[in-house]
Length: 276
Ligand SMILES: Nc1ncnc2c1ncn2[C@@H]1O[C@H](COP(=O)(O)OP(=O)(O)OP(=O)(O)O)[C@@H](O)[C@H]1O
Ligand SMILES: [Mg+2]
Image (tube, rainbow, N blue to C red):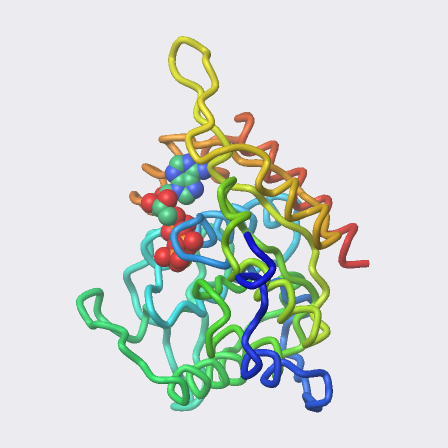
């Protein structure tokens, strides 16, 4: 990555400038808010959001998950949800409970076929509705699954919601991705604490026991050193993780003694430590 490529545009820097005063709000019924973000799409944010939520629940916390990915909501599918949330008073939404986790998603409001071609103001107002009109019940950790990149949804959230910490998900080759830098810069400028990086799809171990580094090596280490953020854990490519997500049966809920379940347990412990 050359210095020229790494320079962020002036308009982006103006948008996140600390000169701008942000009034940040808590979410009712929620103690700690954790955002899961990434520079680019398809790196495993939603998979990590779901399995981290399950892990925190297994640690006996009250957990909620908010799917803020207006462009490609995937939490309903990954959590195996099909029913819509209820709205008893005509104003507030009641989260759906599954695996003892309170869930809310823009995916509940639209059919799977509806293309999510929304413009900035709609994204921002949808997010505010989510934040203010969901009856979260005594939640210790609300995990927010963000859309990829540093678009309107993430910017609105970072500026208007009092996020306690952000996790950045990367794959090993993301070192070359300017959006990782944009994401880190945006959280720093909007005073959101970065809890750490998770490197996903680090390697694949074939049946003969050989480890294959399909997406390159050490990308997260380099980002971690360069931007001084902790590398929390590395998650290997595991076919079952994908199959379980597709089937709406979160891996960590059903495979309690697996290596990946233990990796998620370590992530949970580290983020709890880093939140304090
Ligand atoms: N460690 C892994 N091993 C195998 N498959 C994985 C792993 N992590 C994620 N996947 C699979 O990769 C695909 C993308 O993951 P996921 O949807 O979680 O990414 P995302 O970052 O949320 O994507 P988007 O940016 O589109 O929201 C999914 O099919 C998921 O099951
Ligand atoms: Mg996703």
